[in-house]
Length: 338
Ligand SMILES: [Fe+2]
Ligand SMILES: [Fe+2]
Image (cartoon, rainbow, N blue to C red; front, side, top):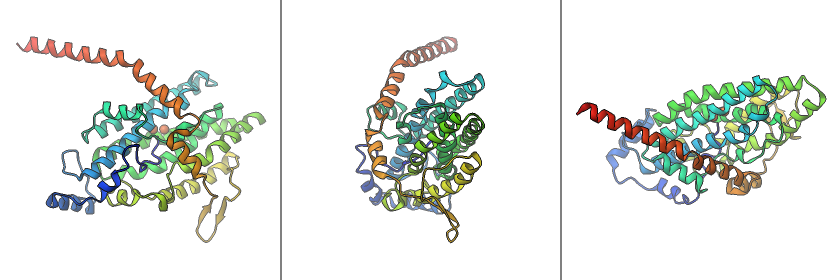
């Protein structure tokens, strides 16, 4: 999934903004880079790029990759409890897709000269951010459908513009990811449609899940434009194409009619069609809660990180075996060549 606040600095990276403003020591290369930006050409791994552009991309793509693999946890929690074999198979495939998204994105970030070990170490030691939406619990089966519909839905809104990102490997990874996210969104919606045709308890379960996730999904688009200092530079570099607030509005406008068809109420008394703006107006987002969660104090931050670290440690034997196998193959190949 899941870019949200991808322009939010990781811990110990507060100096990045200064780096963004630093003038280039290599004016000719800088000019060539700017020309490519103006012509909307892609930047590829071997091209010269300003340090701040590289750092911003490493931060954004690695945050995105971390979000994909941490995002496997809240839904993975329901694989063993899915209500039918069909739902289990769908959920298993979706969670595997998210793992795959993480792998494409770590690979894209590695082309910028940062190793996967470095990125994972930043995640596991709590220095790197991931989407704060995954720091909330999945309390009922309806949460799985709502995550597909709203969380993947918000992710698609955020990610489609990234298919046109100026950095080639990231843009190309996003094309495939968006196709899969689109399926995730539809399966979530379909699952909720089925529940809404069920018993009053099932309908209430869906409404309760919508109530708990709606505002968190709106916050996924990141802080308001006025409080999002990295956004302007991201736009100039062709990394960000549409502002946080514009993306949020597009998401609200697309989702309200879907909620009406589904038969659920979005928990916002200020949600009203604005004829003059031709958009839905919506109420105020609780940014204090958002920042508390981003900064490590959400309900599941510690649990998510501990689960990730344990999974990594438990997988050490697989990495060791793969390295031993590769070394053996290399030795065999050298013997055959001799
Ligand atoms: Fe997804
Ligand atoms: Fe994903």
